[in-house]
Length: 284
Image (cartoon, rainbow, N blue to C red; front, side, top):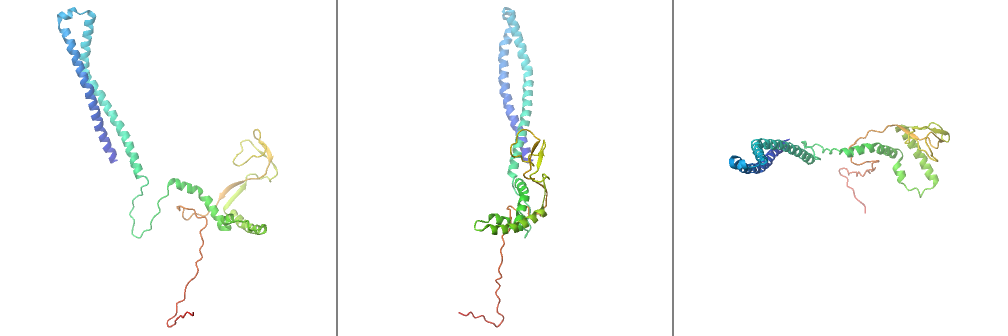
């Protein structure tokens, strides 16, 4: 606010100086030109002998010229200073508005990203900087997918299974492992993911796709010609998500995703100290 007030005052001074010089530059030549015109017209009208010799049309022109110069001499200062005063006001307003906008943008850019200064008490924990709005929206959008992936990893080590190279194992070993994983993941889905089929008919039955169908919910394959309704065989009933129950995130402001924490088993390496009077002798 202080910078804007200073600029408004400076803009007024600049406008007054600029238009003052422009007014002087216009008024002085105009005044000199009117003086020269009067110097030529006045003697012609005051000399009766010369006046009587002039043609009527020329005499009328000289009289009109005298009246014109008198009118210009009388009203030109008022007109000129009025126009220049209005121009000064408009120029001042334009400079004030433009300068205030530039100052506002400069102050906004200078203060953008600057952390708010807050007194930190002694021994207080360091607070994390607030997340950038764009980054927070992106994290909020990806949060359910990451939570679901973490649940799959927790219940059946999904990430470990996908990352594992199954080439060394035979089909029997893989089948036994997949059966156990399938039970874990099925239980997890029933607990957290609530689904329903898009079509209730059995797969392989004939169905009709009506006009105005949802192209995101129904995908047409085969020979699709013309406009709906279409008649075809249901190859897959489709799934629609009804509800997703996910655990609450403990720390939503973390800057990295943790699907599964690393596990470190700490070994007990406690050494019994000898009691008073006992001496440990290491045999070689």
